[in-house]
Image (cartoon, rainbow, N blue to C red; front, side, top):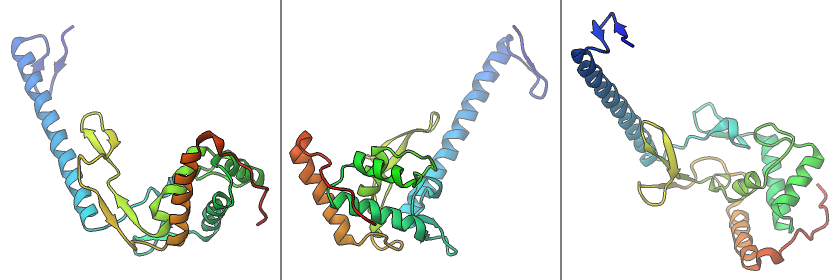
Length: 198
């Protein structure tokens, strides 16, 4: 089937048309690669300058402040502090999910149910202690926009005191130590604590 591109005066089934389509396709791909590289350079320059950008719609506890830096949402801050407290009192991620659902507290995505992955992410995210590890993931393929975890392929930047902390650094470190302790116990660890009071 022959397609005619009027603006370029190209018939797809002609020999000239096939060559022109190949050239135009290559040019378009090169332009896409150039744009992707410029965006990547801009992001990495921002990272190296220590500028922190949060995915606010999916991130519990912070909103974009007047100066462009993350600002604390007090009502959500109490939820994050509750999660850390419950974990240190002995609750598992599943137990914390159940507890928050019983209280009717919605997840960061606004859903009535919580996932263990979300709780783990909140408990292990350094941003809650006011710091930020930048470039945790990077784009592998500019055409497919495929992302992968950064395992040393590109530089990472650790910014301390980049925004207000919700969790004290000592408490954050205690939680990481508790994760390590529970990992050594494996399946022997269970949610044994009684329901705490708020």
